[in-house]
Length: 76
Length: 236
Image (cartoon, rainbow over all chains, first blue to last red):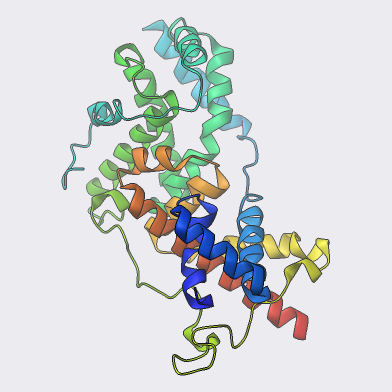
C-alpha cells in the first residue's frame, strides 16, 4: 500500500469499513510510515475538533413561543 | 427517494421500516405517551435536545436566519399535528428531522429557489477534490512510488491550547461552511451531532456508500484547512 492509497482509505478505516485484508495492509503500512501515522492522527484530531462545535442552549423566547404552541395544541 | 417528493409530512412514513433509532423503544414509547397527554416538561426537553440542531440544518439551506427560524417553528408545529398518527416505527428524532427536511423543501419551492438537498440527486455536489494535494507524493517512477514527498506534521507536537483554541475551532467552522451542501450536511450530523451513519442515511435518503464518500471528502477538506492554518501560523 502506498501513502497516496492510504490517505484515501483513512476514513473507511476510521469508520470500520475496511475488509480484513485491506485493514491488515493498512496497519502494516502504518508500522513503517511515520508520515501516515501523522496523517491518521491529524484526521482523528480533526474529527475531535469538529465535535467541539456543539450547540448553545435554546434562547428563552424561542422556547416560550413553542411552549405556547404546545399548550394550544393540547387544548384542541 | 423520489425526484419530486410531496411537501407534506406524510413522507415520513417512508423511512419508518428501516429506522435504526438510538433511544430504547421503551423510553421512546414513554416519551410519546407523555407528549400526547400534554406533558410540558417532556416537550421542553425535546426542544432542548433538537432545536439548535434543527436551526443549524435549516440555515444550511435557507441561509436567511429568520426564514430558518420560521421553518423550525413550522417543523415543531408539524410534529405536534402529526403526533396522533405517529406509529412509533421510526424514532422520534428521525420523524422530526424528516418533517424539517420536508418543510424546508416546501419553503424553498414556495420562494422559487432551487433545492440543494443531497437527497434530491445532486448527491456528490461539488468537484471531487483529492484528499491530499497530489504534489505531496512522489511520482510513479520514484524508488518509493506514491509515498510522501512532503509528509504531514505530527500535531501532537502542538501545544494543547493551540490544537483546541477558539481560533482553531473557528478555522474548522469556516471550512465546514465552505463545503458543498451535501458534504456539510453529512459532517454536521455525523461529527457535530454524533449521529450514526444509519441515522444520517435514513434522514437524508442517501445510501451508505454516498454517506461515506461525502463524509470522507468533508473531513479531508477540514483537515486540509487546519493543516494550512497550522503551517501558516507555525512558520510565522
